[in-house]
Every structure is written in structure tokens, then in C-alpha cells.
Length: 222
Image (tube, helix red, strand yellow):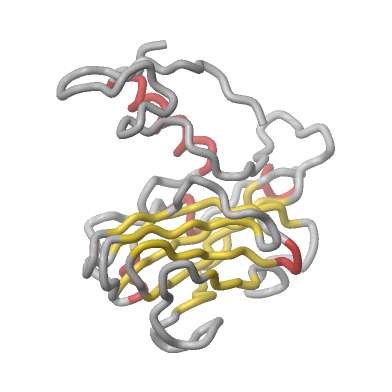
């Protein structure tokens, strides 16, 4: 399968239509300037179907769960490389204590000392190989991530590379799906890298400027 710019655009539109979210979230509520806007459907809307369907998405008012600058949700201080911060995401701020499979988080890195990345994953599980947020030293960057909930109703945020402050706002959650998910239900999976043109992961060759990457796998299963 050959991945073209048009195909990428169609895929992006499908993701927005399905999840009601974009790739970047606006960290302005944290006092950070950004040109990226939070999709209104992600922050303030919840469809009637999602309100009752197992595996449905529920939007909640954006609420800060973690801010390592001022000690919200965890002790204050820069998070060094190799450190993980556990964040409780269920039973708080309108999110049920049970029956939640994943949460939608706006993740922000700020005040970093060097280039680095953040990995978000279920508490109590192994660290996955795919990052949720990448930054260059000294810059403030944000991203929206759908993260599976782990043991104790928590998710882990692990810093690699340069130390950084981490901010996490919750904007929604996914209700646990049935054993056999219904059509339209969301099933969160463990983050896994499908394509990395630096190492040739998922592609037959590392594409040069102006070339398309030819994917080895057209379909992916859990």
C-alpha cells in the first residue's frame, strides 16, 4: 500500500470524525500560548449515543489533574529522565470510579532542560515503545492522547531525555466496551510504533525528500 498525502488527509479526517479530536490540543488554559485550537467537539460535546453505548466517548469539562510546576496532583519539581509520575484519573472530576477503559488527556511539557519525550501508558504495565509527546529543549509543546487506564485507576507519565515539567488536563473518557465491542465503540490499545522512517520500521525503505513511504503492513491487529 502506498501512503500519499491525500490518503493521510483522509485518515486524519476519519480520526477527527470518529473521536472528535485533533492531533494537537491548545494549552492556553495553562497559560501557554499556542496556535493550535482544541476541537470544540472534544472539549464540550458528548453525543447522546455515546452517553449510553459501552465503548462510547464522554466529554467532560477540561480539568487539570497534574502540574509539576505547582504541585497539583503530585509533588512539585522537574521530572528527570527515567522518572514516572502516576496520575489518578478515575473517580475524580466527573469521571466514574469504575467502568472506564481510557481517558483523553491534554499533555504539556514545559521548562525542559534538553530534548526529550513523554510516554503515557496504563499504570502497572510495561513501558511501551511509542511516545505520546516529543519536545525540543526549552520549548513548550502539547499533544492530545487517549490513554488506557491501569491498576488503581491510574495512568503513568514517563519522561525520557531532558528533564521537564509536565501538565496533564483530562477532557474526556471512554466507557469500558463489551467483551465483543459494538459497531462504533472505541477500544483503546497499548501504544505501538507502526512507522519510523529513521530506522525503516514499517516501511520497505527510508523515503527521501518528495517520496512516499510504502508500508509493509496494510492492516494491524491487537
